[in-house]
Length: 350
Image (cartoon, rainbow, N blue to C red):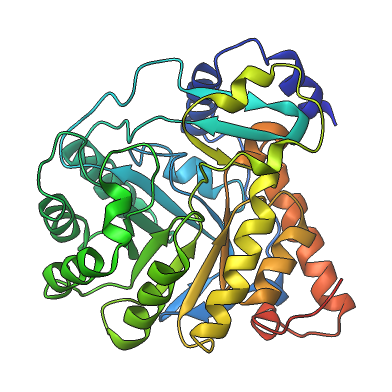
């Protein structure tokens, strides 16, 4: 409640400035790691996870606060999106809070310091920690080749990442979503697959067409290169923002991707569809609208082995992580399950 009040009081401050302040606090490791719940621990892809809750890409683009982020209680982190060359991203303002829905619209455009600084930070982290970190890779805005940035980045990050996510779903970089089309997607996979040594995921848009989604699922099932899908990135749809009045309604007409609770329904429907189509044979990471243990429970029950959050940190603060884990652990006990893995795809109602 206190952080929600603080969040409301700072609505007039640039969200990017607040984010920078949050990153600074994490650099000083002001938070102590939370309780480990035995019924949330599991093994996946030959790695031991303390829990299935991760930090989504976009929060720590330069891998600069990995220690501090893990101390919040996350079971794993996804750093990035990183591009080969540094880029400033889209012109400001480019992040807009929608407090009535605890949502955010952003069009950052893969702003980051580039792969060299990213790798320097990640290597330093690896010297002192065994924490699980995935790396999310994307293309530079000015790159004329749809594929070369991804093949270059994949090789660069592979030795230091626990897994790699190929981001082909951001709405804020021209050409990225074209890689979800059947022929483009197949060509991308063919180019990168020869370098694979680590688990690899593909991040998908909630706005993808049904035919392209089916093609992605078929390739995921039939290509050893793809270990799983991340569902989903942000949406360009605004259909979910018309159920209540919005004080600054002009914001919903801003270009960019919408995240937070309004995204939950569409991602859950997509998770359900993909789990059914792939018969539970690929790993699904669920993202979009997770702010409670019930939200995490629901996504895992629909077929996710892992889940991620970001926007709820903005509105509920760092303690949201421990609250979600405590509630998720309790719900699993309440439903008579011994471990969170028993919940995956069980389709249990709350």
